[in-house]
Image 1: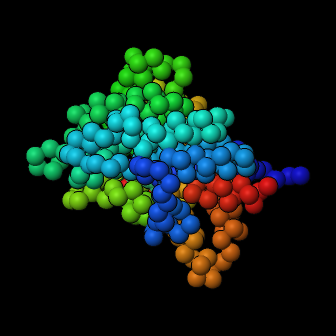
Image 2 (image 1 turned 90 degrees about the vertical axis):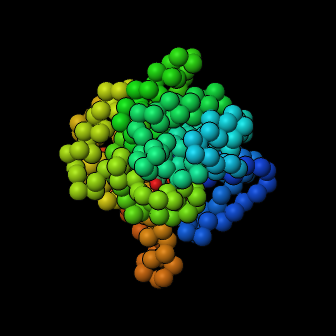
Length: 306
Ligand code: PBG
Ligand code: ZN
């Protein structure tokens, strides 16, 4: 009767790693229980999620080819656009969000273009990100979710979407407050996106900075984002709380791969029950202020809640 925070399947979003081809499923060693899947199988998972009232999916494409410029990121027949179309027809009511970044598509594994001395080129990367976002919109995505953390990308992507006729129909879920985190390790295995040299500290946030993390969210709001996101979740509950108070936009949180892996491996070692620990973590993220949570456990959690 007096519970302050509720957790419902509608507040969950399921990330999916999408392979090219058909009928293929690959387990991810670093994320027990999560598979890479081809678009047809992604559509089956989406149908299962929708039947349990999960609100949406977040797609990560794993292309056949990588190059220095990440050109496969805007291939209309790449894994992400193909999965968008398959999911749209199989589960019409589901919100389809697509991760927009270059790191899965570049041979060097960085989120954008890299200069002659290995430096990450912020401004030069923005048109490529916009091109990828437009390709996802053309395939039918509802939301594009830029995860690069480069300065100015939300405005550039918004302009590109508007110019291509998606002013009304496609929103931006900004990875606005994304810390540079060790907890992305399992994801980089899953997505084959570990940088071959260097790191992402020039553009992702320093975990020591709370005020800056909020400011990044407010800047993305200014530039035209429709929703903000804090990531990781459990290490940034203060930022989720601050940002949801200071921004008018809905703030989402991403329970990242390392958070899932910590709970999974600890539970497998007998430390605690996975379902209890997962639910406690998710409700705490909601309590901090997250309107919805991206979690690899979305389908299981929805089933437990049902
Ligand atoms: C890539 C991207 C990352 C995640 C989402 N998009 C990893 C990174 O920035 O290196 C992390 C998600 C997770 O760990 O579950 N831009
Ligand atoms: Zn990236």
